[in-house]
Amino acid sequence: MKNHLKPLRESRGWTQGALADQLGVSRQTVNALETGRYDPSLPLAFRIAALFAQPIEAIFQPDGDSRSQSTAVREAGLSR
Image (cartoon, rainbow, N blue to C red; front, side, top):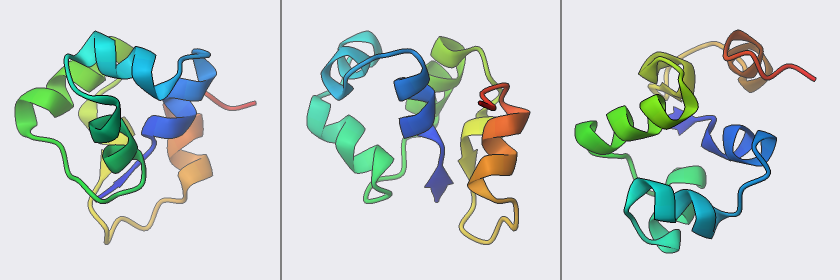
């Protein structure tokens, strides 16, 4: 599953550790999410979406989703 967690986190100026603390997970879990080695559970995906005030679909896309990362980031309101 592709995700846009890293640009969302960076847009807030948060470290992986700070995000992990807010989500109640380890920094290693945040790193695994950001690098695509781990797909979040549904409850964790909901916590992430609520924290960033974004729909889950704006943060996580199935691997076959044809939208580019820049399109998804723009749709999430994070365009530069």
